[in-house]
Amino acid sequence: MAAASPALPFGQRVLAALLYRVSHLGVRLRPLIETLEDVTPPARRPGVEPFRFEALAASDIGDLLALGTEANREEMLRWFAAGKRCFGLRDGDRLVATMWCDLDEVNFAPVHRVLAADEAYLFAAYTDPSYRGRDLAPRLRHACYAHLRANGRTRLVSYSEPFNRASRRFKQKLGAVEVAAWLHVDLFGRWSRTIPVPKRLFGMKREAGL
Image (cartoon, rainbow, N blue to C red; front, side, top):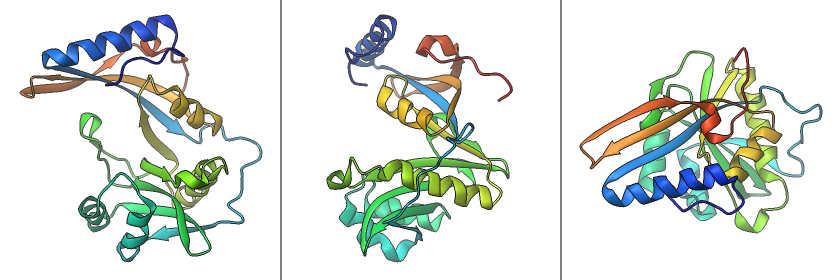
């Protein structure tokens, strides 16, 4: 884990520094925030125009690799083979932003679980760096929300690192609510467990009824 950003509140800077230091002792502590997205959506959602929203397939792997996503060819082919969904925005024929959805499970190992019939797990979003500043990420995310909800997926789950304030603010601006805090503990690679922790530890707001 990276050292704490100076922009963080003092208490969170201390916590981040502590987690960073103990990782050098073979004790890995990974804090996570569970988020429900599109809970309180804005009155006006951004459209995708002039870009084109589409579902991608394994045949688009060349375009995904050209985009430069963090996942490699083998990993993305495994995702497609396992039935995970990939959506993207195109500028003409050029793929400029993508994100993945899992309808079966939260496939992130520290918080792995099977999803309910009305849930979807959102992960691995990426935008072409040369297109940043053109609101592609919120355009794509809102288009994915609409697509998933039209197909009965009304609880949209994702995870953020608590010290990544930019990611947290981005999701909250789109109507997300932070619902739970977790700490994944790994001792020397021999034993691991994910435990719930108080939300106030990461400066989260208390939300009722979620």
